[in-house]
Image (tube, rainbow, N blue to C red; front, side):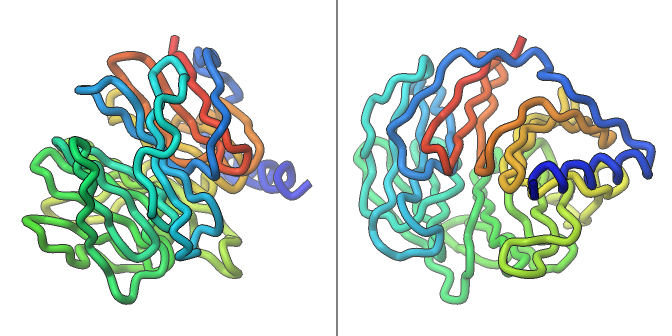
Length: 291
């Protein structure tokens, strides 16, 4: 009831502000489904080895229990190695740059050498909820702290606060594209993770740090993963309401898929026309073909 009621409210928002909301799968075809995970939160593609990395929280999202791990999965939906990297706490967002995989793990950014599994950890003493990770073309790595309205940056082995402002509206997903970072905002939280008004997509200029809304700032959802670019638009998940949206650079929103709660930080492999979506509460990874 909560889910359907909130969706009705969101549709009303779009109608009021004259923004179209479409119900269309946008040519997406489910081609495989893989079980056997433990709260999978993020998936990222390694083009050199042609496989996927999947983070598994495996417990509470803020529990320092050492249960978290990273899996390796083939592009055709087969488990290659369920527990490739172990001993993490609650790994969430992933990003790959060169031979290093980066994982947000509560109050640490973990850098993992994919050749030997060696880990380097960058700790933030007062971090509350490090969530998503994205890597720029120059190797700088950006990490959101959803609770503290922060974005951290790792550059030349220095890990510092890059931005801290309530304008971020509890940033969850981060996605580098050309000269900008696209932010999937959760929306200002009022009670735990609840929001009176859900979030929307935002754009941050890497040169000026100017923050702007994609569209006119109308609420979309409690946004999580962000993939795509200005030309093709952005594929965005809504964790709380279980949805996949397509949002154009002008802010036009199409709901493509409807899930149960927990659709998390997905991956879009443009050159292979594949979208991979982790369902965190159902312990599944879904593979969709974009037609």
